[in-house]
Image (tube, rainbow, N blue to C red; front, side, top):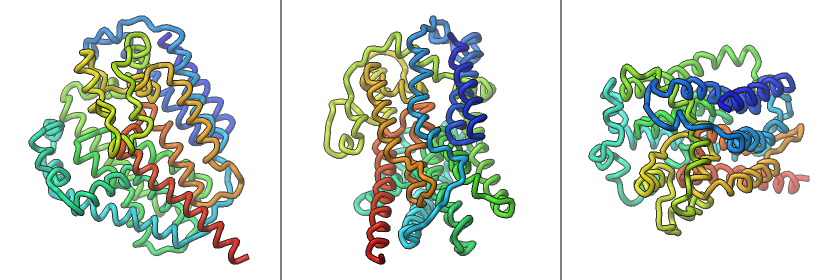
Length: 421
């Protein structure tokens, strides 16, 4: 069974590539293929980093079938979108475009000022940065922990917006391709996409930066049909620097935490998805039905479910009850199983398919706000190759803010157009 996901997603990726080229759907499928291929050496050589019975268990056909077919379902709306197809892109309200751009720029400036001392302290740690991860004293003395009142409120808002900061890349590409904005504005807009990485450095977390890199590639693929050779030359150096710095940070944290086992830890990082999904399917019985993942914003502010809702605290809660370490990667399907049980996987995946199909505009003429909405929905299955991130209120709040802003911008633009007519 270990070869089935790798074979299936490789063939599906090849099919998508032949039909659409290197589209966003092809990218998502190939990421599943990539992780499934890395599962193979982990399964056959389980002692490469961790001795764990997980990698000696039998693999069965039913979880394997679910692991292959359900991601295909949630990716399909983006296959229908076909990002390789060149469309007419418009900006029906440049004022609202500019406001959103300055929200991202303002968020970056706030984050740089607010977290400056925390970030510098972590970066100065150099090769020892991994030792600071999870340090309770360090976290208790951070800017976020010690702030109060309006500053604390602003930091919470900016944290949520920064969780979706790569959307600034959408605005950047549109600006350089279609608008005549100043170089300073475009550079600030490009740099503002990095505010999410500030949170990753602050928490000494690799995954946030890795998700940023995945979104970075996804957005580039969205705009690939519109970027001519002249524009590529202008932005190549900036993009190469950003991408390289992200990789350097991931490697730095990995080396600090795992030392001589760095290469094995990266295999474990990328290759555990299918195996842990099968482990959950065969062995895990939900300790509670945590419906908080369905409404993380309401859960954080208004509803007490009797257990944590955010992913890491809930994983610790489950571990305390079962004795099993579950804060690992098992795709969005594993997250659903952990919170609600395996019977919820298909209904919630169908719900996502319906919502994504409804909100992702596949017409030949799109506004910039349509494109942002498509990116937002595409982020979910892309990052869910590892875990379902929107179960955490910070990500859910950032998603909802930008999503509702774009829906409102579309409504205002239509109203103004009708008024002019």
